[in-house]
Amino acid sequence: MKNTNHNVIQRYNPENIAKPVGNYSHVTKISRNAEMFVFSGQIGIDQNDNIPADFNQQVTNTMTNIVDILASQHLTPDHVIKINIWATEEIDWDHFDEIWNKVFGATPPSMTVAYIKGLGLPELKIELDVWAAG
Image (cartoon, rainbow, N blue to C red; front, side, top):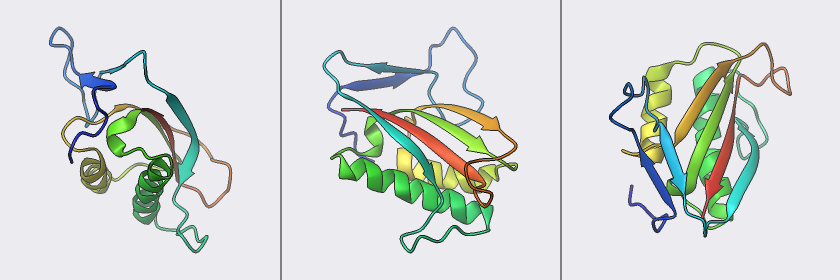
């Protein structure tokens, strides 16, 4: 994916600390001139207002929704600075990373993952909070 954040965002992993244990950046630096965007948690609902029972389909739909909401603000995944992942069951990391890497490429944003008992609706299995700058 082509970097379109015009140097507003820099991501890196300092060499004096352990490498990330997943596909994320330890440090995300935002330029002073950037506007901040905070999005409501994105869920796995599809364009027909259906929430699939399948966890991996919820992951796929959630990533699509993230790309779409970013585009609504004239942003791309390159503008994402932080994602918090809330999941109610174990994440299938092979599937998640495949979708994540397609969306965020070689320099993904900072990330936090938490497993929790429940989300806002009982059928939700995953929700991602997205912060961006542009």
